[in-house]
Image (cartoon, rainbow over all chains, first blue to last red; front, side):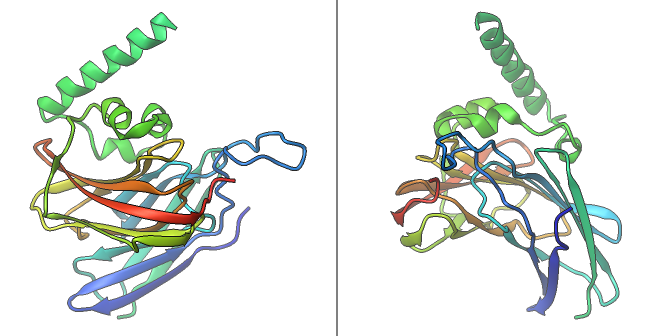
Length: 104
Length: 154
């Protein structure tokens, strides 16, 4: 199981900036190992952000997202105490879900 | 091979019909299994648009792509996509010269701004496209050329 995501929220100009740092190798399927064999693709392919349990922002990712992805998106309105939950699923079917409480 | 090609062609037509009828289940696509494998494997942006069953986007100054013109490290190129167009349901990011052009799709709801910021891999210098798709199925793009000194695919 991979490490916990780091989720940071910050109020700025009426919106809430959400930054998520995920821990994942994000193998593109293009790289070769020392023996010359192609390292199979293994990357996060879906990310869902839910505000108080309701999905508000979903992404699908190809193999070209950088290792240990850093994602930023903006909530239009949220109040202190709201819960933001980020869930990702990778190409092996592994999942990880982490939650943060908005403080701003 | 013929069969597969016909199947893909057929799927694309059905998807186009669904999109035209306005019943394309964007929210349902977030569920596991809705991942568009063909689109994420397509070579070049034109093939990716076809696999996604969308018309070729029109250039628009209302779509923004923020990035440095020169990226030293192709393994992590920060790119931000946003739009000022109303009623945008989906944003996409494509890198023309990558082995698979389509990098990311974001489905936005009314609770978030039509914006995302990500770090992507680029194998070589390339045109990068930000595409915004409105609720009624129109597609708009912005283009930016990013030079890469050190490729991020190796």
